[in-house]
Image 1 (cartoon, rainbow, N blue to C red):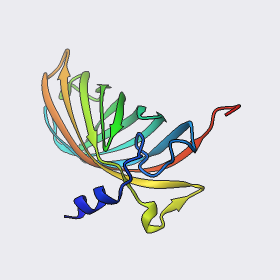
Image 2 (spheres, helix red, strand yellow):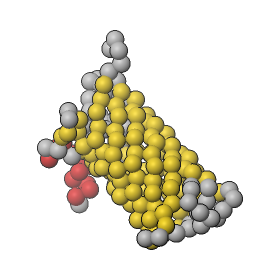
Image 3 (tube, one colour):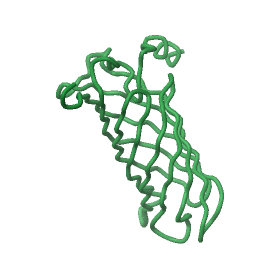
Image 4 (spheres, rainbow, N blue to C red):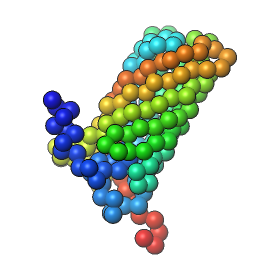
Length: 170
């Protein structure tokens, strides 16, 4: 029920990752922030955290980040990634992830992304002229290469700070 209410209050003029920013007001946008998630499937299961940076133009976005998986207190795995996608009520994208840290994980992944960005400025949460969003997401990843091959699943919540700017001469 809460998700339905939040969807209804999110304007339909939204653009990539940025449900409240005016399309006419800013040419480019950037979001940055962490996530908390849980990974399961191929290889070890456990909590993960990510630092993500996204550049937006209109309805399209390009994202890069680094994820760390902590299956237990003695080890961790490192996953840098890049993805591209678009926004139309939900964010959807596709990308590549590299896996580092041991033979238990695949060195290569193709992944998909689906998320629902929810603005937090309606509760007054703003920071340094930008606004904050939270985004529940799901990222299925298919591992391939010289390691285990198969599907992993990541379920998480992104927390991002968003700013916008115009191109010179705009």
